[in-house]
Image (cartoon, helix red, strand yellow):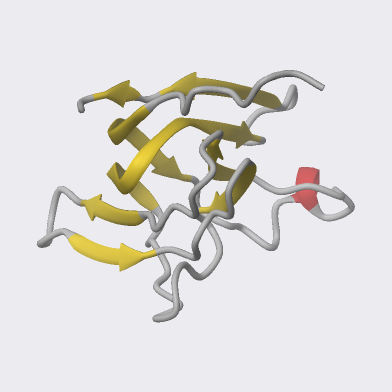
Length: 133
């Protein structure tokens, strides 16, 4: 067994490019699909302490939201789907453009993944956030 890992990451991460696609239940290409377009924030906690994340969601047409997320146990990863209700408030990010700022009480590593199915060839990609502090 190896020695414990020094906690990796930063306490604040910025994701300026969020975009939830509109959901069209009548789209022929999606009627029988097992998947749907979404984005998810993935956060890795390598520390020996539980982490308490808070998400700030920014919009082009309204004031930002502050959403406390479920805690991340020590040495675990958590995934937060942005197309599903978030936090205890069950906040739903509306379709369209948004940006995220993730704030944690300890260092984490964070990235966002996007599943885009608005074209015949679906695309999934991930982007690392910008670590601030």
